Length: 283
Figure 1 (cartoon, helix red, strand yellow):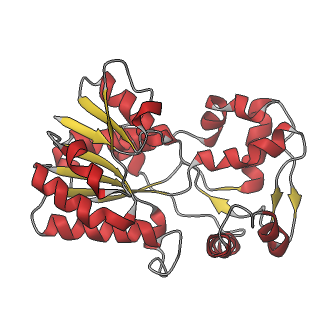
Figure 2 (cartoon, helix red, strand yellow; figure 1 turned 30 degrees about the vertical axis):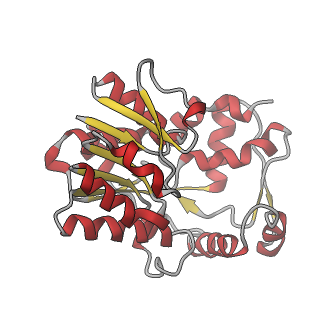
């Protein structure tokens, strides 16, 4: 089996490449700029820009399975070219946000939902099997706090009591390895969560405990936060985040056993992720 791993600069994809290599499975690391990749020794790289269909055929040549990032613009075209190349299984890195009632209108969820629908349509037509991995909040989202924490100031949060289910990127990669290598797991959708529902304030407390450094925060109004991110975050995305945070303020999020069911071990706690990335929070 040969697996094409798209978005190989990403945390999940790069972890998956290492797992595939360790398992002795042939893999091809794909990126829109493959020259900058550092895959395991001896692993092939290929240019595959999910925004450029002209790169699809070369990347898919000789591939049996694909780990696909949810770039919705050309998913239907990618599915068509994958079918033509003889691909038998596509694993999509989607998001649990597709389960929200307003997913089709939500700017964060809509691209994942569109990608899921395109792949599901191709699978229904017999092109290949499609499996959707739907992680909740990545533990790596905490890295957005790192610059402020390194200075000792801490982040400014509009909703510090908002809950999320931080999941280690390695757990997502191991789940991907499971569905890629065990045929009975194909063709389903899996909601992946971390093992705890933690507020942002609780996550910062874990960062402080693990790193041995203060991890303070300040509370700001949603309007002030929105102004602070206006230079790099589109307004629609900022509004969607604020709406989600407000809806989950003080409300634990549901957890699932899917990571353990797929990988054979419980999901890693947030403290384990912080320990693996502690240096990011230190000066």
